[in-house]
Each structure stands twice: as structure tokens, then as C-alpha cells.
Length: 172
Length: 172
Image 1 (tube, chains in turn blue, yellow):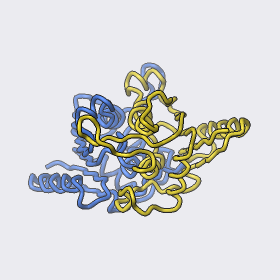
Image 2: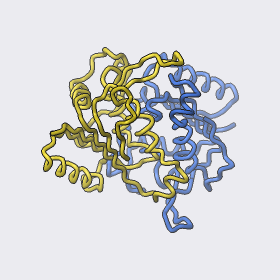
Image 3: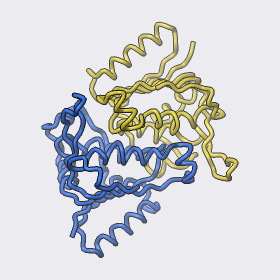
Image 4: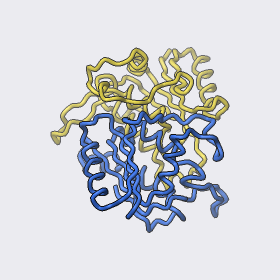
């Protein structure tokens, strides 16, 4: 049995994103996995990262602590969101800003160049991102360069796996 | 005299982002430009786009209407933000989600392929994006592929200029 975190970020309960989330939840449950599920709009997640939350040892609200603990202990992370401007919606961007914290998901260490770079702390083996879009796949790749692939693979998950082990998988 | 919209998205009043904003404001004012300035954190901008705001003819709150009117009438748009995960912070992502609306900043029209694609409605001649980062320029370009360049140039401003005229300029 694995422990899977699922994050959903669409405001319409009748959306295809919600249908994907239902299918994901049903499948994981049928296979006996442990699930932590967050519908960020439904729970009224506050996406604003304010300055007092910056420090690694800052006092953070209990709901953010819970998100941090869940993501730390997850064996797999599944993100479901629509493509808005080649990026996640604000509520999910705020989840990244607030939950993917130093000391929780990464640690700054001095790299070979002397620059401090993030090394991953997450134990998850798999990150799986479902995106919906009103842009064709060809146009998404050729005109926009598939920005969500870059964001999730290179700019977020790629930095977070424990040891930054690129052998671990991100599927998008 | 030009009419310039300036959007700032850093939570710390002592930040370099705020210093950049002050320099921008002083310079534009000294040159006699009209200015609409928004410090999104200071004004408590709500970044959450909810479902009822989706339709082009939806009733939208007065503060969002004001943002829309300003961005429609701007001759130039200046965005100042830090690089958080190769993306804008959530508050600015929410500004895009809510203010860069259909009928205000773009219009969906049927393209040559039959797919509906956005055509720009903004009259601004220039978009200027200032980013601060704790990543070196080399690492930002080579490891991450300069995702903010892609986001602002290809995925946002590139779609919004009136007639999608690529001769207009985006500087980042």
C-alpha cells in the first residue's frame, strides 16, 4: 500500500478536472492505497504567501503544517489542474508557494559553483500531473513550448525528489 | 504623455522589487507620464478566479472592473515580481487569471486550423517585466530554460497586443 497525495485546483465541480480526480480517487482506493485529497477551491485554500512565512523556522498556520506533513510523507503526488496561461491557476501556485517550503520539500545547499541551489527532501517516487487545455497538442508544443512540462518537471518536481535523483519519475 | 500601468507583486515593503517599483514610478512621473500603480499585496488583491466570473459577460467586482479598464487604456504595462518556482507569485497569477479577461485583453476567434485562438485587444505598445531571482543567469537559462521569458512573452503578452502584432515589444 502506498500513500498518495492528490491536489485538485479547478473551481467548477462539474469540470473535467473533477471527473479526472474522481477516477483517480476511485482507482487508488480500489487498489488499497492511502489517500490525502485536497480540492483547493472547495477547502478555500489561501494562496497568499506573506513575508512572515518566509523563514524556514517560521510559525505557519495549522492547515499549511498539515499540507506540509502530507507532502513529506507521500509516496506519490498527483496534481490535477487546467492550463491557464501556460501556468497553474493562482490557488495552486499559492499551494506551491506556501507548502513547498525550505526544510519540508527542499534544502538550500552550496553547489559546485558556490551558488546555493535546492536539494530535494521529498520521498515520493512518482509525480503525476494531469492537465486540461483548450489548446491543441501541436499548438501547445510548437507555439508555447509546452510550458507546463517545463514548470512541473524542471522548475518544481525536478528539484524536490530526495537526492534530486532524476531517475525518479515525473509524468505529465 | 503616455498612460502606464504598473503591477508590483512582492510581499515585503523592504524588498528589491519595491525599490525597483519606486525607481520606475519616479522616472515615469519625472517624464510626465500618467500612472496607474498597484501593489497587489498592499491592496489585498484577491487572486481567486471563481466559476461565476468565467463568462465574458459575467458581473465582476468593481475592483476587477477598475483593473480591466486600466489595462485596456494603458499605453505601456510594467510588471515587477520575484521568480518563485519559475513563475509569478500566486497573487500576480491571480491578477492574470481575473484581469486578463476575454473581451478585455483578448477575444477568441477561429484560426486557420479551425481551432479558436485568442487575438489581442490591448493597445499597449510595450510590456516590460522586471524579475528578481536567487538563481544565476546561466543556471536560469541552461537548467530551467528561462521559464519566465516563455511565460510572459509567449503565453501572456504575445497573445494580447492588438492584432497580435509581434512587432510590438516585450522586454524581460
